[in-house]
Image (tube, rainbow, N blue to C red; front, side):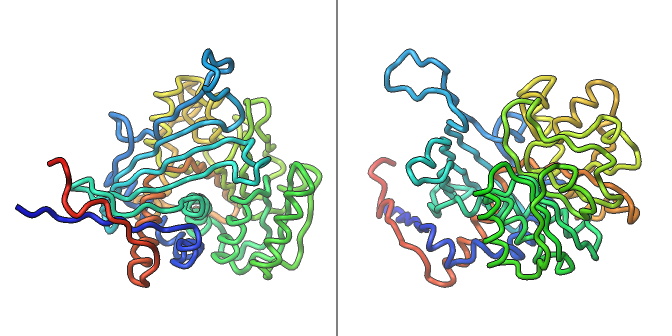
Length: 377
């Protein structure tokens, strides 16, 4: 009896770039298809509810064993499995290691890999560098919001948290809205602001005006689109935005920590949108009320306000329902829209599969043999 050999395509970070992982428009178009499938329900993630973000190892503050890692900022390991149907029809997992002290060693805070697997046999198809998969899909999900919800003539983009993710987000938004010509930046330190400005000048020459802001209010003022990508510990440290700071018609994209007055969030004239309602329902189950104190995403505030009887969870819309044409998007030029982005491994599988297919077409990557015939059968 003969057995099929199994080969794996290994893709380094350079291979991923050669295969187009940094194509912001294609990535956004791919994520638009992803959110449609999410709204249809053609996917599975971890847990019995099929919507868990992943399984995370955290460490104690005072380990009892000398070699066990000690708890610290962003110090964790996480497995994020998913299956996505539709045109992708692929299973996979993102393996996530993170430690903020990596920067002292010249390494990124997080080092990520993605494995793609055959949905039937479980055999690995690809093993790929995933820092860029994760970064570009993280920018592309708010990009779908800009594509579907922002005003077509948007000119001013406000950025809170000018790190690498928001740099790519700026590039994504600029490609989707060529009318953008003014960039306002609010950051914690000059180094990250300067890196952001340098990135924008190289990749987004359409911005004729770049303004560094000292306050959140200044950054929000006159912005047609806001992107907020701040990771911070504790509710008291979440950036807070008052209603009067927001321009009528502003789209706020929030893949990071941010808070607003309850009265703004509960105003029926304000549209509330999330990337996947079931994700926030799963978080509310895994991190019981008050979830927003533990999970910094705006959608978790929505579930808490529903728990408090201040907001009807039913008014919150999936971006996928808007993309599928089931519910309207922007309903007026002066409508404020708050869009929460949580991030999901289905997105990594989708963008990983797309880049993998390009790599196959172009002969990019290194073939690794798992076996010609399995030793155990």
